[in-house]
Image (cartoon, rainbow, N blue to C red; front, side, top):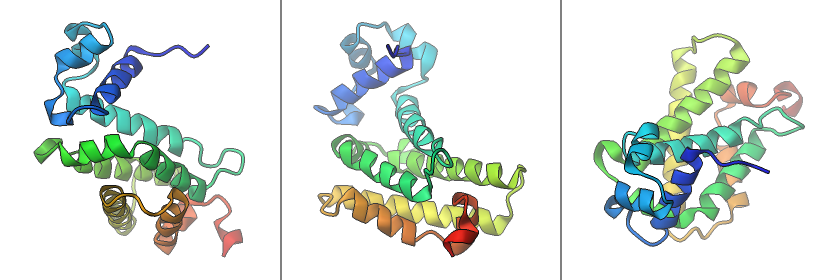
Length: 189
């Protein structure tokens, strides 16, 4: 049996509400009432609903990224699983994209999270905290481009399949980053 954490329960409550209501109109009271928790419980785990949104996205992305290198799971698989996640949650993602703004903009969180997760993956491969500025710049350009593509894909009706989108993302990966994301990079050349 898989036990849910308090964070998971609050996240599910929020996601349930986000299916029916604009994110900028959802209150902490609604989130906690929907799952029979108290507001202090919410604030023990998150500073506000935007912190919850970030946690939801970060935890999903990290679960996907954690599979890299396990049982022939490669970057291509990560991209496909990510595209499927966005597609399966397109109503929530579109709600978050349309109804958050400023420093609490969902798109800014997605960019930041995806850059950090990719940087973490590169650091694991080079086994140091230092990443050359050129590689860091490529990570940012790649992430910003793929996130923008995802945004347009979902907001324009998601006409392409997740498989088609993930293939575009894969083909867009800068050559110098492939060595960090594919375990057998030299063998795929």
